[in-house]
Length: 541
Image (cartoon, rainbow, N blue to C red):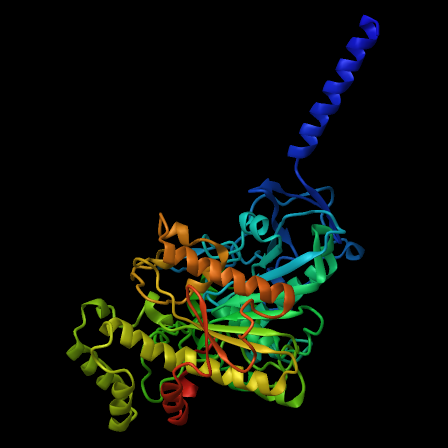
């Protein structure tokens, strides 16, 4: 080979090598129904952040169903959309300082994390619905959301969406219903989630996902949204499995009842017509929400024992569009998304932010006095029964009190939900109660209270693999807990059945560093709460 040919060969070889290097590190680009989007190479996977899935619900689109983006209507972007930063958080009060406001009404964006952008890969898909009392948070809240790292480790495609919150997502008003083509109002946040699920069906294969293998999972109010969607006639075929983490099982208020309850919002805003409502600033809308008077949208008592006759208003309602009936009635009448379900709660749900701020300083006498002061509004018999079922001397007053409230508000009502789902669904419904404690007290999502026991979100942190951001280095018990949650859930995602063979749809799993099986968790305690009529005081929203 002469010198000229040799130089040319070396040049070509270097060019090809450099081109491959550039191509391997260049931005990933995926074509969606609205045009191409460019993402990031991120932690061994690909992330696409802040993809719009609807027109911004601002101006005259406030308090309207979300409007999908369509090329035919010239509402898509031109060129390549740079999906490299997260979309706006939906407008809300700062959860750590309620006098501060965060986000924007222009917030209908979603994130995709995927190990592959090969459309023929067809990986399982998990779609995340964040919690936050329907009032706060977003789809990418730190430690409390899917990540590229999780996509790489689990070989699953993850999607998470922002949806409208509090007044923007759920305010039901007769004034709005009168000008609505559907004749009702409310549940806009549910409509946002449904539209995001339709986006997944239309686009996820281009991100390496399988649209016929979608698991919807949501925690807290995200689980409550799922509870509603499982009874919605609008959701058939949008997901094939459901994992509900600590959902609220009380959902029965009609639109007409909510219109009456929410008249206080109109009074607070000073509005009497639609034009006035649309002219309000985001801050004025938020200030108009009845936080501390009925219907108590702040729901400040939900982490404490109830007071007789004190109920919070419904934020998710039976609106006649997304929901035609309360879910339990809809299931009984045959309206359901009949898919395998996994329903989970934790023994000490409220331990992350309990009502009594001095709980850690309690002795057993303070425990008895406080329980008596709260439950005596229902009758002395209820006080005596509760204290006998959650006796003094067991672990700590904090443990017993958080266990008592968590059973009344969450665990026992979710047993009712599970029982009815098993009765009306043909597909299996699996139930677990988590008992694992962190190896040291933690402050979940920077809450001021140090959670010591099996608190709200602890199963979510385990699945997301974010325990090390609270406990570093993790102890062996933390690692085992995290691994066991992932093992059981990933088996459910792939096969529709948890990993433990004896965990069937007729039992309850006690989920900790390993999985044990029982017929029913706290049967005597739940029989007492439910038979005494306390289901009505279960978590709402």
